[in-house]
Amino acid sequence: MIDLFQNLHNPPFLLLSAFILDLILGDPVYRLHPVRLIGNLIDKLYRLLRDAPLNKRISGILILSSVILICTSIYFLICLILGKFKFLFDMYLTYSFIALKDLFDHIHPILDALKKEDMNEARRLLSYVVGRDTEKLNKEGIIRACVETIAEGFVDGFLSPIFWFFVGALFGYPVPFMMGYKIINTLDSMLGYKSEELREIGWVSARCDDILNFIPARMSFIFLFLGAILCRKDAINALRIALRDRLKHSSPNSAHPEAFFAGALGIRLGGPTYYFYGLVDKPWIGDSKNTPNLSHIADSIKLARTSSFITILAAFFLLTL
Image (cartoon, rainbow, N blue to C red):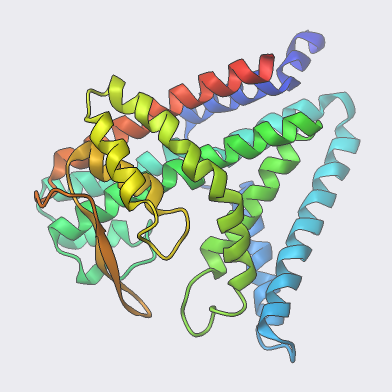
């Protein structure tokens, strides 16, 4: 029986099992969730170093390197303790680092609030998902924010962790590579804002996150294109818009999936966006001036989910070669 379960430690079966667990269980909220523990560690180090008499960028480098060192040390220590049962820990972490269903679970209540025309509730729920000032959003702005979140989340919450798991598997360490990506992505989500307080200390985290998402953001066109075909969306137009508008954001990566979604759904995304530190005049992405509606949120979820199945099947096949 143990040997049977240990077969799940093989990277393709480990990844597939984690994906299925995410589909079934989602990402429940609890104090000892690995990403929450990583976030707590980041917060403690940030509070310790934000007022230290150091260059802010140096402080940011110390935070990043300390989190990676501490987390990887704990990982290998636990694996050493567990011995041949470490595959259970690897499966738990891999499942915890795939956040696709959790993304959809955050969007569905917003969609329900919009259906009830409860804009205040929709804004409140959206504020848990995005870093923008949701109080300034009208219905169209909320819908655009949901679609953009799904598009970007497909890459940094799903495809990128899978990609770095795959790269790690080539070196015999799929879970540590995946964890390293998740650490940097969490650092960026907490410290990578362009506010006066975080601009310098979060600089290194933001740049590292850009580097780690660079290839996955561009690879996303492959899986989204196939997903768009299966979802009967305009895959050719989506690819045309994606190739044309993929570099319109200041981020080198986020406009890639957003541009594809805009083309596939026939809507515009981006545009002037309010954050808590002020208005950012983002360029528009996409050709259509059609007003986004609720069906576009549901279509975005369907496109991301379909593309995720294609991604997993491709990764499973390549890992078994």
